[in-house]
Amino acid sequence: MRMVDIITKKRDGGILTREEISFFVNGYVENKIPDYQISALMMAILFKGMNKEEIVNLTDIMEHSGDTMDLSKIKGIKVDKHSTGGVGDKTSIALGPMVAACGAKLAKMSGRGLGHTGGTLDKLESIPGMKVFIDEEQFFKQVNDIGIAIVGQTSKLVPADKKMYALRDVTGTVESLPLIASSIMSKKLASGSDCILLDVKFGNGAFMKTFEDAKKLALTMCEIGNALNRDTRAVLTDMSQPLGLAIGNALEVKEAIDTLNGHGPKDFEELCLQSGAIMLEQAKIVKNEEEGRQKLIEVIHNGKALEKLCEMVKYQGGDESYILHPEKFELAKHIIPIISNKDGYIKQIVALKIGESSMKLGGGRETFEDVIDMAAGIVLNKKVGDKVNVGDILCYAHTNKENIDDILNEIHEAFEIVDEVVSKPNSIHLYVK
Image 1 (tube, rainbow, N blue to C red):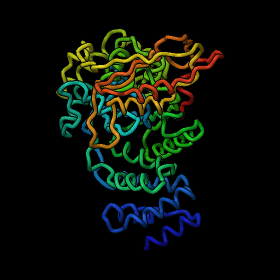
Image 2 (cartoon, rainbow, N blue to C red):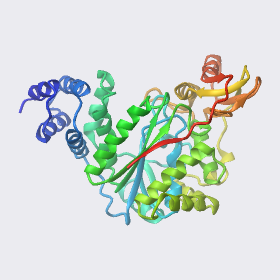
Image 3 (cartoon, rainbow, N blue to C red):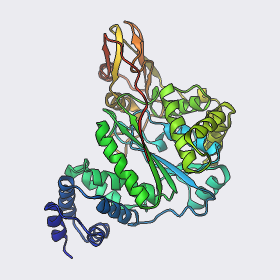
Image 4 (tube, rainbow, N blue to C red):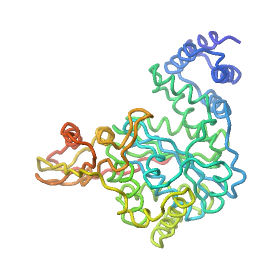
């Protein structure tokens, strides 16, 4: 078998066999095939696409290109949730304890943030002492004991994706739907959970800009997961404005704590309740979503969801007193109000601009080597659909940096205010199963 024949076959619109896909994936991982040939093939895939069988085979072979997690030592049905990334997305930190408090087993591996999207690991590390890398035996024990662990991915999972993802980034092939779907699903499947809920975001602050593109990705990923014997479902959620009010690591953890205390922003709370209800149904803890929703509301009201977050933090070496007393989180030196200069209604809060501004304030990283200021970020005071008057506070910028007038102007520009009344958008637009 020759790599050039596989490239020309796909270039001409041919269907690749499982053997051909295995040849190029494993050959690339073993450094037997050079970057330039894989680049050529990925460009051919971008233009010609792949059918369902090809995408399932690609995902399966990528999943098994390195280690896979065997979670059989964890009792019960294991559930996992994955977000395609967004601004202010602290969902796992609230949702995980909620479903675990209802009896589900969440054995979750998360990543770091880069660019305008924050990473769950970075947010958890804003809790003093919190360890996000633990050994396998401790991971299993923790999930068996308390029903939840959120940890970093082992470097030995899906090496094919690590190499191909880095190459896609510099060859203009990031947008290929088969490559996006196989990248996400190979990592989720290798993590070993029985059930997966995907939160596929769309809008200016998301990777998928339109609802239709997000729907195609969600359907493709669900097809992959279900073809490979995992109960895989998806919700499509709006990222045309930030999720909740807080953007930035410690700020988002505090908002997750507020939500577990029953005082979270409505859009964020709704996403947690609907997603959690689906996960409880997947775990066969409830018969339907309505029953699941009631269970989740109950564990918020009786304090068991917050207790579960405390347990997870304590197990992973963190100081759980910060969960019970979030006022202990250190505040940034400068907390600057951004003021409206006109009357009207908020039509849009450009999530991409807000996310990038939060990063520039110190709350994110442009390269993996950058050090994050855990206290930095933005807290919204208004959301889409809210009425504003001249002089109202739109949001607060939190930073330890000086001379940030340019960043403050960018934040102001993210708010689009119009004269006409604007309706408040729904968080969730579609449920795919």
